[in-house]
Length: 207
Image (cartoon, rainbow, N blue to C red; front, side, top):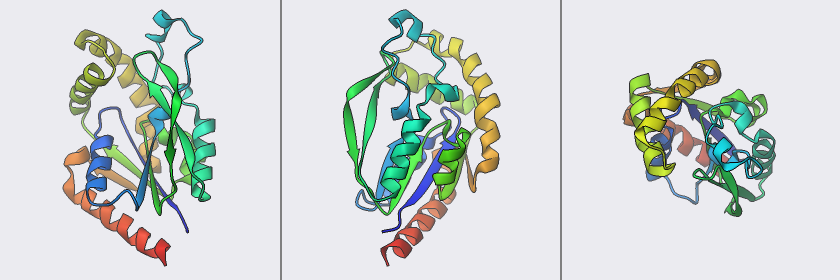
């Protein structure tokens, strides 16, 4: 079975997760597997708790790309992987893992995905989800309060770093994309095109 890897990148709060969710609403888990770049944040258990609050999670160095690349190669060769799990509150990797079985299509998503050349090489299709800075900030505030235990003030204080990292590392990777999706998950036309492409790939690999 040939396995197609689709990389979905874009700025923090751009709507990548919504795009993936809308794609999955049209497909089944038997057809597509999902891997999140966020699962591969480095384990910071050795760093004092108060210092972890200042870790820059929007810098490529925060991701253990070596492990991500290794597991992408593994699943692309038809073998299951043990995807790590991460605790955003403590900024540490958990002992539990998630078994991800190979499927015809594997979607890997994350803000810094295309900063790593080896990840780009492993992606058969590269998608960049684009959104206006104001829209991304609103989504970041809601997400970080809900999922990462941060206050509004904390999120806004961090946003200067987030914006700088976006301009420095994430926005430049748009040039590597095969497809750019403006307006994130609200761009239903672009999602229709993506789903059609994925279904075509599934049909081709199933033969």
